[in-house]
Image 1: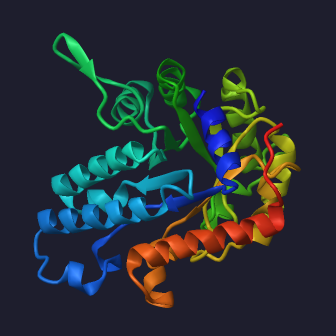
Image 2: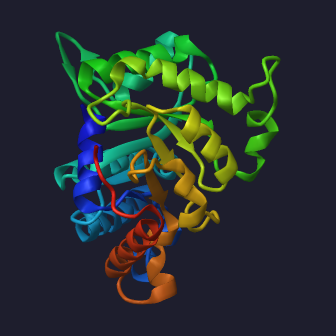
Length: 303
């Protein structure tokens, strides 16, 4: 099961770090941006940048998260770069999380799922378009908007991360509201995620249906970790958004399992702060992040 393989990779590397390839032209060194005046040129430069980042970190981190919005802004060429980035990361042995936050009514959700997790139907055949390992999903349309993704996860051995408690400052405007039964909205959504993933729990006690839980809300993360015993967390907000290892320790269990922590700008743009080439600085940032996380989590054990 995909969640078991991800956990095993995290344990083997002793590193629950996910590198966020939220790459846009402005993050690239000046020599890679100079003279870029078309979307095609931007997409080609971004793909070259991404490949060098992947080459630099693929032996020390288990996963990358590729945020589709950063590629959509460059049109068709950008989406080609997105797909090529996904393919290259998988070729290098990384787990790939497509950060697309998709959802819609059932029939449309099925098409989103086909694009990123499953297969697209053609005349007399099917083909995998992106073939990502995980996809972020917005579950606020309810079960009928999530069911197609769940079906493809079972059929193609994929996983999901559904929005539960997000890292943005205004997330509480909706997610912290109290329902009639006393639960908050985020607790309700967490309970739904736990239920949706109940029949996809792997050997280490975590489901392939996970939750997005921001590092910037440690009190809420503690509530969710205690409440959602089988739900694996994707944890955004580390670094540029203000989260640190001490804040996100509540996302993990006593064995240091239960989550993977994303860092995007702090890795992609590390060269601007620390010098060196962007690839070497990215690797150094990943090593520093690993050390920071393990200083709080301790040795990560699969039991």
